[in-house]
Image: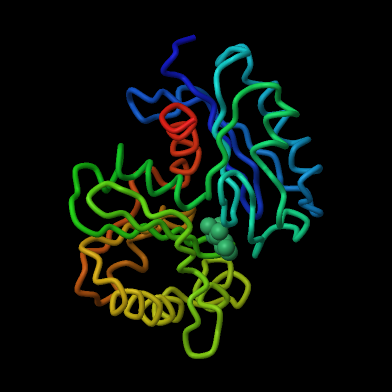
Length: 252
Ligand code: BGC
């Protein structure tokens, strides 16, 4: 066990994933554990799953090390204030206090896309990049992390921009591609509309595309026509876990 190894846990709309992270390398230092997100993903139900994951890794990370946990919602000083893709009971839950009490150790809670953004900036596609970098995660919803010269502006929630009268993620998330059976070309049209709008608002220098679907980036990124450079996340869907661990260690 090394003090560079911190447990990161990523709570998503479909799975709750955890793994010890080697923060020197920015890599998982052991097998990842994944448990389906409970159908009723209330804070209590989710804390039960998180506890199982923590127990499974206690030998590896020790009993006292801090833990980083992502939540797919706005996190304001540890309190969850939005819940688009998770049970509404999360709203106004002090997640930091809830996890800290249950797990009996220091916990840092962060928005899932913000965690992924920070991880990509430190260890992945954004490493060393100056200027405006936007990371988006395409999954159950659309998450965003906005970074200027390496500094994150948290909770930007650009998946909820209203575009053509729709909540953007309800048209362009990868879950929508699956649900509506869209081809890569059809989905890319929606992504084009989304990213052009975001580009008009923020003029990012670099857009990093994360989420599980980024494994197949070659199927859709070449179909997009943007001024900004747009690339796949290098840490793929491990970015949330790695960023959560980074937060626990560095922001605590
Ligand atoms: C939530 C964000 C989250 C994103 C990705 C959105 O619906 O509002 O907080 O980052 O989904 O999970």
